[in-house]
Length: 80
Image (tube, rainbow, N blue to C red):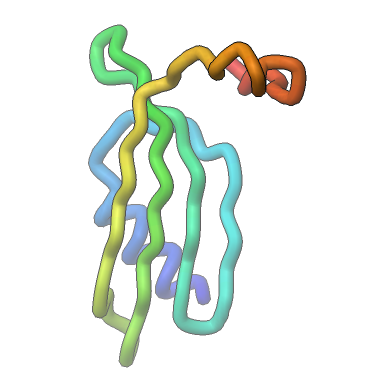
């Protein structure tokens, strides 16, 4: 998996702050928080590896938002 992590580090281009990383034999998943000059986005990234190379990557970006009133009591604030 060290080789896969090296590939991901070369692939990663944002100034993201790594919050969570889960590794499997052929997949690496991360949850990050990226700041693009004051605009903050949460990022989920899934990278699949095959034969020591990146076979597929999926990135999902979401801007933070206040929860609806009905759900607010169940929400905790993410780390800043």
